[in-house]
Image (tube, rainbow, N blue to C red):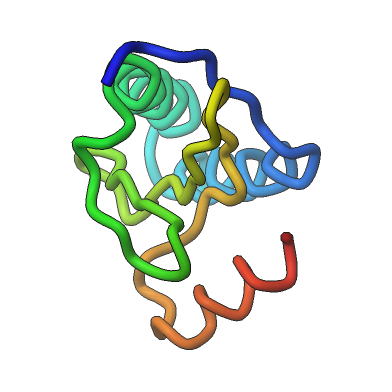
Length: 103
């Protein structure tokens, strides 16, 4: 697959604020470190979104390296849409419900 642009749903901004605050609460420079790892993962998704496994109803998941979080996204014909950034320590049922609620 060719690279294609990535867009974030507006609700993802809240997910990112939560994740940065979580890492800032117990790591010095935790928020900026998380943000850098998030950007790396987004670059991989933009480069080849099909390399990540399908998890639920066509949604794919990319684990953000060295964090507890993952990026859930959907591949559309001309764009990849990030639906959520989730704490992967939650139950799979909770994560699936979040994705369903956001579509």
